[in-house]
Image (cartoon, rainbow, N blue to C red; front, side):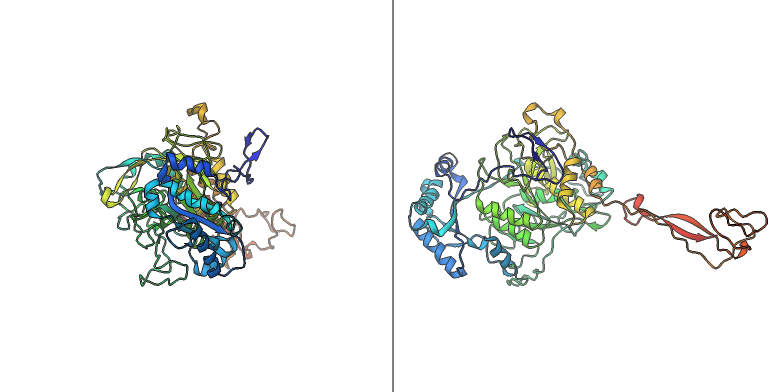
Length: 558
C-alpha cells in the first residue's frame, strides 16, 4: 500500500503521495505449481492442510447447481467429505459476495487415513486427480491446496507481577510506546469507539479485566441460537470464532489476547497496561472486533474472517499471521483481502519472522500494509522479514501487553506479530481524529511522511527494506488532524449607551463635527453609539488540554 512510482526498469523506488503501483506480479495462479507444492509437502509436510479449495467457473447456476458442480469435482479428487462453501452464505451481505464471486469457492477434505500416512502429499494427490481429469478442467476457474498459516510471534509468554495501585500501573513496562511518541499523541486523542479494529488471531480472553470496555458490539447479542441480524453468523456479539464455528472467542493461547491488548486494552482505567488506542479520561477507545482463526479445535477460517470484518463494519483489520514459506499466497486469501480493501478496510499484516527478504505473503501483497519489527531504538529486529514491500516499521521486541488469565494476565512477546497491532492501533488513533471516512491516500501519506528515518542505525542489509522508517505517532496524528477553523469576529452591540468618554474604537475630535472619521461614522452625539470590545475566551472543549482550536473571539459590551 506504500505510495510509490516505478522510476526505472531497475526497480528504483521513489515515494510520492497518493500513487500506488502493483508491488509484485500475481502469485495466486489459477493452476498451482505442483512440483513446488511437492517440495513443500516433503520439507514442511504440515504446512499443507488436508483440504482442497476450488473456485467454480462463472455461470448462471443456482446455489444447488453450484454445489452439484463442486460435489462432482470432490468425487474425482477422492474426497472424504462433501463439498461445502469456503465463504458461508452471508444473509443480508450475500449479494455482495455473489458480485465478488466469493460464492463460487468450495472446499472438501482429503481422506484422513491418506493424510495421516503421507501428510501434504495426500492433498497434492487429490489436487492432481482433478487437474488430470480431462472433463473437469472447464468446470473450475482456480484450484489450490489448503495452506496452514502460522502466528508471527517469537518465544513464549513471560509474565510479571501485577500491581493495581495507580492508573495503568504497568504502563512503565511499555517503553515501546515512548519509543514512537504515543504518549504525546494521546494529548490529541486516546481513540474513539467509532473506530472498529478487527483482530484476526487466536481470539481473546473475554474475562480479562483490561479487555472489558473496548469491545465491538453487534446487534446479535441475545445468545438465542438464531442469526438475529441475518449476517450469516449466530450470536456473534463481539466477533466470531471462525476456526471452531462458535461464538466463544478464546482460541489457542495468548497470542491474540496480546495483540488485542496492544491495539486497545482499556486505558486510563487504573488496571494493568495501556493500549495504543484504548481511550482516556473515562472515554472508550477503539472497538475491538475479534475473529478467531487459531482455535482450540482447529486452525481455519482466515478468508471468512477477512470478509466478516468488511461485511460488519471494520475500519482496520489487524493480522499477525502469515505462511511458513515465501511465495505462498492462496487465491482465496487474495480474494478475501481484495474484498476487504474494496470495502475501504485498512488491512494490516505482520511481515514475518524469518529474517529474510523474500516475498512473504500476505504481507507482500500490494494492497495491504506490511509491518516490519524493530527494537525501541529503531534497530531492525534480528528476526524481521524485510524488503521493498514493507510499508512501515514499528516496535516488535519485548512488547508488554495482555495475556490470558491462565497464562498470567500480562507479559512480553516479540515478533512482527507485535509490531502489526501497534500500527493497527496507531491507524485507529489517526481515524479517531481525522474521521473514519477520511481519504485513505491522505492517511497513508501521513504515515509515510512522518516516519522516522532509521537507516543510520541499520546495516546496508536493510537498505530500502524497512519502509520509510519507524512509525512516529505524534507526528502522524498531528498530520491527519483536520485544520482548526479560523476565528471569526462578529460584533454584538448592546442597548447600553456609551459613556461621555469614547473608547479607542474610534477617535472623535474634541468637538463633534460632521466630517467622516477614518474608521467609522459616528453620529454628532457619541453617547448614542454602541461601544463594543472583544474578549478572547478559552474553553477546553476537546478535553485534551488547550490548543488553538479551543479559542474564539466573543463580543462583550463595556
